[in-house]
Every structure is written in C-alpha cells, then in structure tokens.
Image (cartoon, rainbow, N blue to C red; front, side):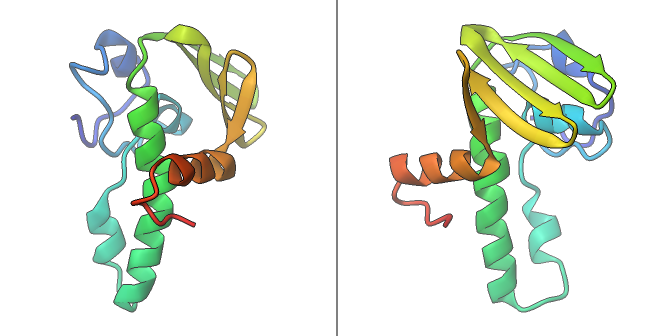
Length: 131
C-alpha cells in the first residue's frame, strides 16, 4: 500500500495488487476516485473526546475504506478529466466520478453515492456498525 504519494498517473502505472492508495491528500480528487484509505492516526490524534473519534472513524471507514476495498478489486483502465468533471474507468463496467463536486460510483449504469454505499456495506456486513 502506498502512502503519501502525489499525482494521478502513478495509479495507472501500477495495478492495485502492486500498489494501492493508502492515504492520498495531495492528488485532489484522484486519490478518492482510484480509492484512498482511511488514516486512523488523523482521526484518533485529534484533540477531542474519544467517543467523537470513534464516530468519525466509523463514518470514514464506510465512506473511504469500504470504497477503497471495492474499487481495488477491478483493473484500472483510464482516467478522464474535464471542467468540473473527473472520472476513472475500471473493468467490469465500474466507474467512479466527481461531477460538479458530487461523488458517485457506477457499475453498469447503477449509481451509488457515498450514503448508499455505506448503507449497502453495512447491510452486507452486519459486523460493521457504520450507521
């Protein structure tokens, strides 16, 4: 897992099995579109009550780590960049995109946004209490 790297091109140079995004705050939307993971240090080192940190961790796990895990199962095909639009095409009809600030994942035309992805993940994995 690669941490702290910069630029979208690195994601297409390697397969997800060779290198996948750990935490990528430098690449703008690209880290999120290719799948970026949760950095728990940032969550738990914040100066606040531990209960708030756990709530933040659960939310980020569902909207970052679960998506990261899902996207990295597919071959990375190509990326698209336009004005207010960024997308990554994966194998099996999977596409992640940010269109005018709205993040979605599509698989063969079925669209999921962060909220529904987190809910689906919880429904299929009851051991994660992300709601």
